[in-house]
Amino acid sequence: MSRYTGSKCRLCRRQGMKLFLKGERCYTDKCAFEKRPFPPGVHKGARRRLSGYGVQLREKQKVRFIYGISETQFKGYFARASKMPGVTGENLLSLLERRLDNVVFRMGLASSRSEARQMVLHGHFLVNGRKVNIPSYLVEKGDVVEVSPRGRNNERIKSALDREMGITPPQWMDVDMANLKATILREPNREDIEYPVQEQLIVEFYSK
Image (cartoon, rainbow, N blue to C red; front, side, top):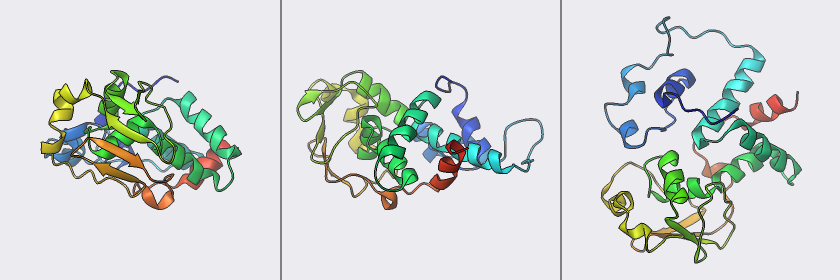
C-alpha cells in the first residue's frame, strides 16, 4: 500500500484524536477536528464497535499515519524491531523516532512531519557535516543534525524561530536553535513518546 494522499483531517477524525498532520492549521481554530470531532461519513457522531482485530488495526494505522510512512516501510521497521534485544513495541517506536524527518520536526524547524520530509528531500539538512536527503535516515547517538548553508535561506526555516506551535524538543536530543542544530544525546525510549499509543496492540496485530 502506498502512502496515504487523501484528506489528512479525515484521519484525525477517524482516529478520534489529533494527529497533527496539517502543521500550523492544527494549532488554530480552523482545525477540522476541533470543528467536527466525530468520524467522517454520513452517520454523524456514530462510532461502530470494533472487533479485537479492528482495534489492533486501528492502532497500527494510527502510528503509521502519525509518522507518515507506507505500509511496506512500517512492516520493515517492525521486522527490524522484532530482531532487536528488548521489547519489540518499544523498539519499533524508537526506530520511528530516529527517522531524520521526525528529528527535524522534533527540533521545531517544521510544523509537521510532512513538511520536515520535504525539507530533507530538498537537501536542507546535514548530518555530521554531510548532506542527507533521505527522510528515513536513522540518526545515532552522537550525531549532529544541522541546517545546511543553503537551507538557512529557506523561508520556512528562517521563520521557525518566530513560530509558536508548542513543539517541545524531547530529552534525547540537545537543540541549539540559535545555530539551527541538534545533537543526539541517546536513543529515544518509551518515556520520550507522549502520543497515546498502545504499541502492544501493534505487536499482537503482526503476531497473528
